[in-house]
Amino acid sequence: MHGKPTPRSLFSSTEFRAAWLAELVSFFGDQLARVALAILVFDRTDSAALTGLTYALTYVPSVVGALTLSHLADRRPRRSVLMTVDICRAIAAGAMVIPGIPLGVLCLLVSVMSFLGGPYRAAHLALLREILSAEQYPIGMSVRQITMQAAQIFGFAFGGVVSSVFTPRACLAFDATTFVASFGLYWCFVKSRPAAGTPEGTGSVAAGLTVLWAEPRRRAIFLSTALGFFYITPEAVAAPYASALGLGSVWVGVLLASTGVGAVAGLWAFHRFVPAHRYADHLPLLCFTTGLPLVAVAIQGGGIYLAMVSFAVSNALWCIQVVVSVSTLVELLPDDRRAQGMGVASAMNLTAQGVGTGGAGLLAQWQSPVFALSFMGAASAVAGLWPGLLWLRSTRKVAALPAPDSA
Image (cartoon, rainbow, N blue to C red; front, side):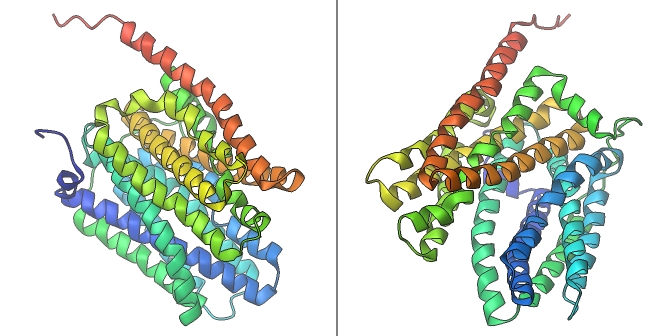
């Protein structure tokens, strides 16, 4: 390929268009389903606790699935893994539409869908590296992150509209059709490739951790995924923060929407001004600075508008860090362990976010939402020093190694 890769050049590839669209439509459907499930469970139980538990089931099992099944996308053709997961999730989502389905069965089906989402993401990230060259992959990750942010914003909003105008089950039925559409896109437009061929004995969680921990640069990126513990704070305390300012629920949505807008703008600017081959150079700075904008909410008199800006900037830096980490890690992992390594790193990130949500909520309850935001923002900079300095040290060692003898 000649010249600098651009999003337009990526979309000239039929395979990339199909794989990108397959993930996008199923992800959009998932956002609608999350809104529908929350409404459906609350209408049937009138319990905020059960509603929150059901919503958590759309995330938590994904961690277990990523840890335990991601290696299958190295042992089996990745396209086949993705298509199998799509069919299984379509069946599960379709079953949730059945009228009068018991709440326990509904929760089980939600857990199955979430569980399968873990290996799906790992397989998809690894498949994209087969479709795209090393030079194109970072741009592909930027495009993916931007569209996922936009899909999340519109998915939540559209889910509320569909659930009110029609029924929550209409959202679940739509979610099931998105998985069928995703299956069809992979089937029709993505080539079948042989499995990467992971040897036996590498399917355990310990083996996945080892492949990330054994090499210092991989270890630095793996450690950086744990910083999601701090970065998730705006989402965790947006509601109590708005309430503390005496503002209504509409402002909670505005605060959360500002994070998505910031991410889209920040990712576009990063792609526009930073060459793809220089992405990894910015990892240490991103680890140190991503949470720092949250400290600004402690400024007296800042109010809701300053919070919107700090939320937007912090989330923009976080999304850039994700793009940098994913596009760098995928090159550092051997192809026959790529999906497993990506799956374990994803599981770490999701776990950190889940625990961080609880931690930020406790801090907000113990002190105040402003304290939780500013403390977690400052603490993220301190915690980010470890992966940042480890990355700098390890890359300098690699650069100092003698070049191989061309003779």
